Image (cartoon, rainbow, N blue to C red):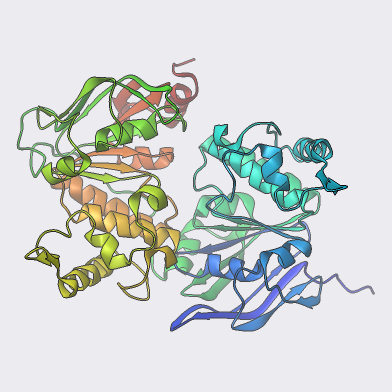
Amino acid sequence: MPSSPPPVLETRKITKVFSRVVANKDISIQLAKGEIIALLGENGAGKSTLMNVLFGLYQPSSGEIFLDGRKVAFSSPREAIAQGLGMVHQHFMLVPTLSVTQNVILGDEPTSLGHIRYRKARARVAELSRRHGLLVDPDARVEDLSVGLQQRVEILKALYRNARVLILDEPTAVLTPGEVEELFSVLRGLAASGTSIIIITHKLEEVKSLSERVYILRKGEVTGELRTASATASELAKLMVGRDVILEVEKPAPAPGAGPGASAPGPVLALEALVARGSRGMQALKGASLSVGAGEILGVAGVEGNGQKELCEAIAGLLSLDSGRILFQGQDVATWSPRRRMEAGMGYVPQDRRGSGLVLPFTVEENLALGRSDRRPWSRAGLLDFQAMRRAALDLMGVYDIRAAGPESPVSTLSGGNQQKVILAREFSRQPSFLLISQPTRGLDVGAIEYVYRRILELRERGTAIILVSMELDEIFALSDRIIVLHGGRTVFEAGASATRPHEIGEYMIRGSKA
């Protein structure tokens, strides 16, 4: 009787240690041909570390890797790629000013007599795009593409290099619900054609929707391996975080009019007919208006690229207006600097945590002190008080469960979820009168999401006026008291959260009106 083929990919007791931190401990997983498996775990569980070991970015401290039953060792990603591994990172590795084809072939250009055979490369990119349903213009510039299309370019890069095993790190973190469905359709097609796929994620429903098996990691170790079809979301969540997790948000009725946001009558923040241009000089806001009161959460929904980014930057003071007013506590602050707005009681959690929310080379304690390092207890007589800064950082790290080797660790060494927690800890601890939050739970696991939701609702109960901008409609409905839809730089719909439904919001997001 013929024996079954060995796994396409297998790890045996992989351990990875960074200084005193054990990121992976004795991890063993298997992946069959044409199979989709999920690697599920909370922030800092070691998921990305393991995948970076597989891809040759890190060398294991101990353990073995096998491809088709043959022991391998990769000293670089180039060696892993040559053996048929491809990886799509959470933060895309693309050159914005180059075309799709140029990005796909970069570093692996077909040449003849010292010249790049661009037409041949373009034809292959177009053929791969058609064959796998990754429809994208091979001549388009990457900077002109939506995030979902940029992800397709990353997948094409791997397929162009003949990847047999495709690893995707948090593949849906920046996608709209429609783009998620399209991605899953593509991945199922790839698996049906024989490609083996690993998705690293923290989203329970996506694990159940896409994968056949799931490995759960906690604190660097495998705590469970399950057939996805027979696992419940609650069971997966408990294995992830080691406790029962409340997956439903319990939101008390709004009690506006009390707390730090209630010092002025009327709305805490009101935007009146904002008109502003984006980074390329094109008009991005075309008369957007909204208001939010003390103790209220206003959810802002919309397909990416309809003015959300510019709306946030205008409120935070990072984008100048062509016209319109920004009224905070009844006072027009449109010409105020970001610092003046912050000192007046406005807080901001930006969408791009790495580009706008953090200074990556700075330590955790330095990032937590940003914007207030010139005052007590962080400084005395104009000089930084490093002991006080460290004490404050340690307190916030404990309260917000920020996992790092210590407050002196560069924030660049933290997982994406823990980087997000640093920003949330800094902004929430200011106890602002008004808080603008863009994509607050992007990259966070269910345990951390539960915690962040609770902290947001605590701010609401204390009277903070909150604007929540999110790509996650479930999040918008779970937290918001009112919802608006931004389309084409305008506010096209507004309703109480209990008076509308996701499908109605979705219609306005796509069309700008109801069909």
